[in-house]
Length: 469
Ligand code: ADP
Figure (cartoon, rainbow, N blue to C red):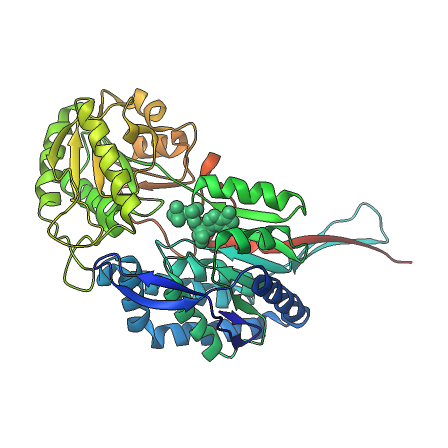
C-alpha cells in the first residue's frame, strides 16, 4: 500500500493469481479500516496545499506522471496481462489510453475557468468560481486495472482533489505499478494514496468517513447501488460507472465486413469482459443468416490462450465468470438457440478459458437477453424493420453503450436520438477517447469520466455576490 508518500507493508497477505495458468504470481500486503483511515487523513492534510496550488503546478505533476507511465509502459502492460489475462497487445493499448487521460487532464488542469454573471443591480458583482471538492475515494475494477485508475485520478488531481484508491482484489499489482509512477513523479505526500484489502473493511470507511467528499466507482450495478446508499448518510457526491448490456445493431444496408470486424472487436476483446462489450447483436432479417455465418467463421479462428503469447482471446477472470458464460449458453440452447461456434469452456488449457461462441435464434426470454454476460458469447437476435428496433434494444435497466451499423446517415441520426444509451457508436465500434464523456444512463450509472465533464465531477461551483459602494 502507499500512504502519505510511504510504501506500507503488513503481515497479512493476499495471493494474486494468473487466470491463464492458475499460478500464484505474488502476494501483496493488505490492510483494512485502520489503513484506510490513515490514508484519508493523509489525503485530507495534503488537500490544503494541493487544492490551492496553481493549476499550472498540478499540470506539471501530471505531465511528470505521464512521462513515468510511458517509461514503464511495457512493464505495466505485462503486469496487466499476467494478473487479469487480456492479450498483451490489448494491455499495451490500455496503457496508452491510461496515459492519454493523464496527458489530457495535465493540460486541462490549467483551464478551470469561473464565470461572471451580469448583475441586476449597479453595485453588485456576481461570479461563480470552481473549487475542488476535497478528498476523493476511487474504487476500481479488474478489467482495466490501469486505465480505470488514471481515468479517475487524473481529473481528480487536475481539479485539485486528493485521492484514496481501492483497486480490485484481483489486480493489485497493476495499481502498485501505477503508484510507483506517481511516486517517481514526486507527487507531494498524501496527494495519492493506495489501500489494498477486503472491500467489506475498506468500503464502509470510504463511504462513511465525513472527510471523504466524493466517491467515484466503476463496477457492478449491485455494488454501485450499495455505495450510493452508504454515501447518502454524509451526502457525498458520487460518480458511478456500472454495468452495461450493449446492443450492436446491424441494418441490411451496413457494410457487413465492417460490422463483423466491429462485433469481433467489441465482443471478444478482453474476452467480452468490458462494460461496453457487445452483449446482444440485432441483425435485420435479410442479412441475419449471412452475418451469423461470417461472424462464426471468424470467431472460430480466434486464437485462445495465455495473453503473453500471440493470442486474440485470453482467459476470463475466474471460475465463476466461466460458469456465468456457460450458464447463458446452456440457457440459450435449452430455448432453441443454435450454437454456430464454441459453446463450452475451453479445455485445452488449465486456466479460466471459454470458447468464443456465436449463437443464433436468440430471443427475449433468454437469460442472455436480460443479463450482462461478461464473457465471449455473441447471441444474434433478428428484427424486421427500423421502426421496431429502438423499442427492442432499449433496456429498462441498462443504458451504457450501443453500436449501430448502417450506410444511411439519416437512419444513423434517427438511431442516435432514439437509443437510450450514454454512448452511441454509429459505424464506430471504438468510440472511447480521453477527451469525450464516458458514462451510462439508467442503472448503468451517473456522472461522466473523460473530457471536461469528467473534470466537473471533482469540482464544486461556488456562487459569490459582491456588493460595492
Ligand atoms: P466485479 O464483480 O466485476 O468484481 P464489483 O462491483 O464486485 O465487480 O467490484 C468492483 C470494485 O468494487 C472492486 O474493487 C471491489 O473490491 C469493490 N467492491 C465490491 N464490493 C464493495 C463494497 N461493498 N464496498 C466497497 N467496494 C466494493
